[in-house]
Image 1 (cartoon, rainbow, N blue to C red):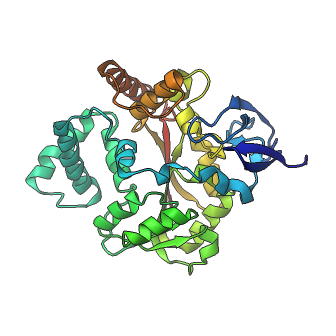
Image 2 (image 1 turned 135 degrees about the horizontal axis):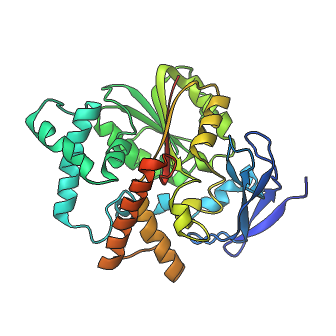
Image 3 (image 1 turned 90 degrees about the horizontal axis):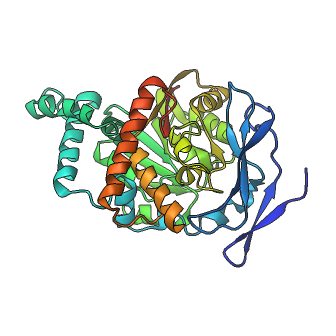
Length: 362
């Protein structure tokens, strides 16, 4: 192994790296997937490359060189989780320019859908019966509503752990749905903010907490597994702390999405170089979970973020910044058209969505 390289972060910090030419999951050789990637979000220095596993049954994408685990905190000093509430409303789908009526309709239809499909409300009420079918009118709505509750059926009083809770929006939402929530995060600022908001939050990695076996009815990660140095190790620990029959839900970017074909160089929003150490496909995420001991798995992709990703990538192409401001009407219409087109592709190619979703049962 070559000696650790160093890359600039801001003006003074350095990130050390190690060579990683072989697939960390199956050991196969890897070919260059992207090269010359820059951090367009928070200015971590250097030019980064990634590889894709040559084993078709795997397909994992990973950084090479790979940052050393000890230096990973240097890449998060100005991360999304430090942004204000307005930014997170934008990230969660409240796009600039969205009308109040549209937001209201989205909310009431979503409440009806979640009541009918997941039991968060009265599934037999008249509003639910009338409004829930409207969720089929938009290609991204159902996936968004499912992600709102992390694909989990109502379980009042059930214990839920979120790994890497960031700004805490999902913890607050799941608490409002009746779950007893706990979060664990490596970011001291995120943990402080969560505790200040009255949430039960622990600082550090999941492995460091040493929770008792069978502690949780559900464990969820929302676009976190791609940041983890050892995904298999994390999943093994998740399986240990789940009760029998408990569910592990993973949402993560899809390395085989149709959106990566639109932007010639890279879907930079989902690449998030160099913080995304890995990018998963349906097959590689399944193999990761199986290596950790999970045998009951459901894996799919969704198109819920396609419009947002289009707008963000267009902004980066034009200005070099992820700040999309208030998109012009033409851009908003094109973003919706891209999402609809991706949905059409998704009907024929189930791995085409921007996001991979896995629900694993212990």
